Length: 274
Image (cartoon, rainbow, N blue to C red; front, side, top):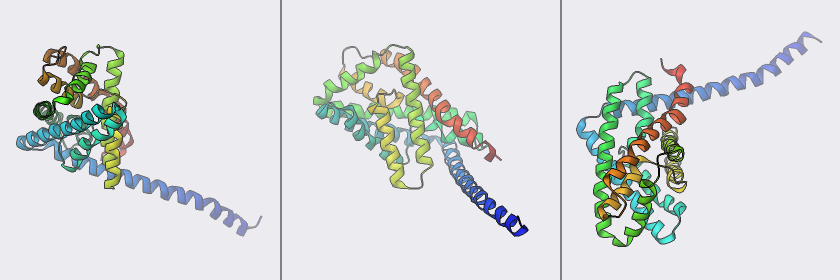
């Protein structure tokens, strides 16, 4: 074999390797860009004033409440949870477009900011606490309006609420809540990684189908349904029963979101921390 042939062989082998290196570099640049945008979003949320935290959390609960209203209407008319889930996606779309805050969104953006040194755990606890309380307050207020304006939905609301408060604390319920936390955090992750409004809205619909259509447990949106039954005075539904269900669902939502989605993402971007 001649020297010319050797050089030709080396060039032939080098071309695919060069293309692979270029492709890997492009992927790394995309990951770095997405990481930077996610960290900045998380930093902004962690440093919000109390007034902003109150308003964004309250509006988040109200917007989720409107999604629950759409879900209940469709479920009442069609008896289909999947069609109801599609209707519920209105709430997630509104949440995204209005830049409001949902408690379970805090399982991704702020964690990434803390990982990058742009926030503290104390700020995270403040964000979670404000958002959780104001989400529940907003949903409670909206459902009072719903049950007053639409008595025809009372039966559907009561049936849905009993499904949650009568679920015994066991592995099935805990796993449904773990998956619920993972699903909502996955939706947030898909939204953060998209540069297209259409793809972001599709992620909102996918999140609604996973949570509502599949029947996973979500501490906020399921609580909004239970609040409706409490306003009605439904038999078998009480604030104590809600709290006995809520505490472990909220905790499992946090664990599921962090372990199933956020932690693997942190491992993927660990080399970008500096």
